[in-house]
Length: 345
Ligand SMILES: NC(=O)c1ccc[n+]([C@@H]2O[C@H](COP(=O)([O-])OP(=O)(O)OC[C@H]3O[C@@H](n4cnc5c(N)ncnc54)[C@H](O)[C@@H]3O)[C@@H](O)[C@H]2O)c1
Ligand SMILES: [Zn+2]
Ligand SMILES: [Zn+2]
Image (cartoon, rainbow, N blue to C red):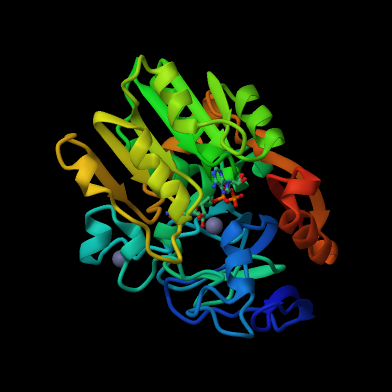
């Protein structure tokens, strides 16, 4: 089968690889019909993710058709149409029992990291009963690819941890796919104000189309002053960090209102300053989270009901044979205006 293989920092190719086979009773083999590329795949290609060894098939998002199941799989059978979660969960360990699937002791983020992933014609999914989700008949499978990772990430790490409330104010720093996913799902709670901050004018225009009440180009404007102006001088009740660099985490500390929450989503590769000298008296909370995908079934319901339209994040379509072009387009997002690139196999 064809698969996108990581060969070490800066090196990848579309290779011919053997078909995956069932190894454990809980495994399923899924024929991938649609997959996509995540910013995290670009981090792997830069060499930032040491757990991902050369030779690994990348990808942790996708939908497909179950091809085969192990003897222990009871929920799925060959022919079932399924959503593959970026997080594999056994459903039984102490972390899974708390809904913290991302910390599953025999799962977590393993696809396209420590085991072969979804940017291939077929993928082996361990703990299939609790790591795949059935796709209802008639559903738009392209839209559901957005639910493998980015929608649960924006919602769980940003909106839920950030305790977005009706009538509240929300500031989102970073208008990439993740920040925009946080924006789309923050709207479930009807906050009065959603301010989105980025350096990219096209992404800010997209944020405005997706329902941001205000957008701020922090390359040209003082973001803290802009958020104060919108919130009567108070700052935002929820501040969502969706970039992952020290400057933006520090900016979040300037944006948060007394009593507010800074909900960090960004993956940080280096330390960032925490200004306790100003924050100690402000009754704020700071949260961190690796996406658990515990809300995937709920998000699927919102897509079926038409309250969430995640396909709006898809900007480009490719075939698996052209996945290197897809990487190129996604990697030059500032020029190509890419958000999510959909890859059909
Ligand atoms: N916690 C989790 O489980 C989890 C899961 C998936 C992704 N992530 C992380 O979420 C973050 C966002 O992901 P993404 O795919 O949307 O990334 P992205 O790179 O597409 O988007 C980041 C955005 O931040 C903007 N930006 C960069 N520097 C800025 C600055 N100084 N001020 C304002 N804006 C700035 C960029 O213009 C871009 O639009 C990444 O760090 C990613 O690794 C976390
Ligand atoms: Zn991802
Ligand atoms: Zn577990």
